[in-house]
Amino acid sequence: GMLVYGSGTDGRRVRDMLVIKNACVGVSMACFWMLLALTSREATVDTLSFWSITVAAVILVLADAMYCDLGDTAIDARTRSRTAPIEWGGTSARLTADVLVIFAAMLLVSTSATSPSAIWFIAPLGLLLSQIALRCVRPSRIRVAVDCRLPVLAMVCAAGVQMVTSTT
Image 1 (tube, helix red, strand yellow):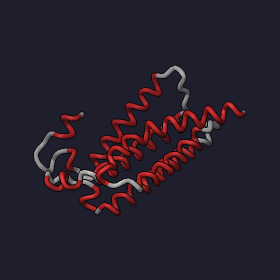
Image 2: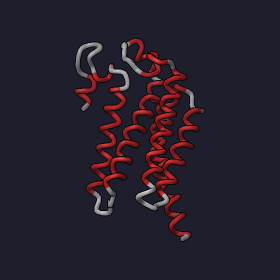
Image 3: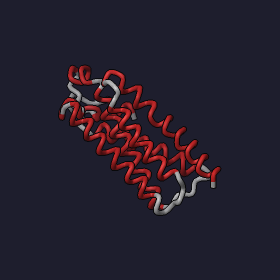
Image 4: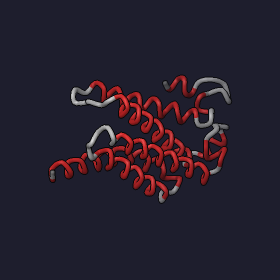
């Protein structure tokens, strides 16, 4: 994957293609997560939920990659990489990423129609709250914050579901 991402002449590398580079990362991460879920003996996900979760994962990683690009604008400008912050400006890139995360959260909420688990309400809420938190992070530190989002969100979701199931 990395060879395809970085190879090619200037302007023809995947990493230089606006938004496509972020989408490639999102698709690869979502495929990895779904492969893990499908190989789990505990996983029972209907087709609609599967696709909602997959698309939400792609969108979330796409948005996170846009946020990470905020911290690399000087380097990306020197190497002529086309990123959302360089092409659209930092504010527009952040707003686009925010809208994408809201859409991903809505997809997860839509999954609750086919599965009554509390996770489908806790995860979207966590996504939205973590997106608000990312808005408070300086661009120079954004990559660390983005990298921490999913593990922290996973722990919050696990604890939240445990609390809900233990009280019922």
